[in-house]
Image (cartoon, rainbow, N blue to C red; front, side):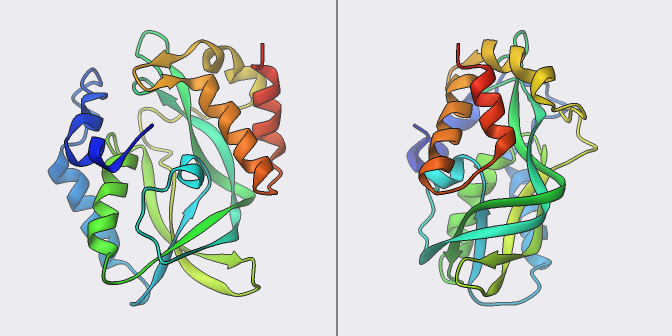
Length: 215
């Protein structure tokens, strides 16, 4: 289980030591990305972080509230080649991200201004060791009928790890085989499928991939 201690101690980034140096981000670069993104915030005060993958069951955020939410214009996609964590360069898997089109149901976590800086650096180290995601500000629809500003990490299509073909039949074999120091790629998919179901969220793509790699 990924914990704050693993991130703050530097142990988490050790999982990426075999990643090619030309795509591995330094801590300084990760911090710079966070600061530049925060400069683009459309407003001040509390804001939300939109979770659509492992952040749902392991947010590791000191949040002030949470609520079901929908992000329009983006859909779940295992479109990022994974070569560390739950895979290796020799037996790569796939990481979950978001690609344009459709909509995504997830969980939104509200962060206050007071804790934002401290909490977000942990989130950035977790999500951006290679810069394969693009952090952006967008609008989400909360389950209470209101809209809110949210931070979300989507796939960076210009990144070397981006894979255009993320169809179930194309990725099932590599996902089923991939394994690394943080576990198996298949376990991630199965857990995501279960957590979405428990949260009352239906995602046919995730369900189809989980069923395809079940045995």
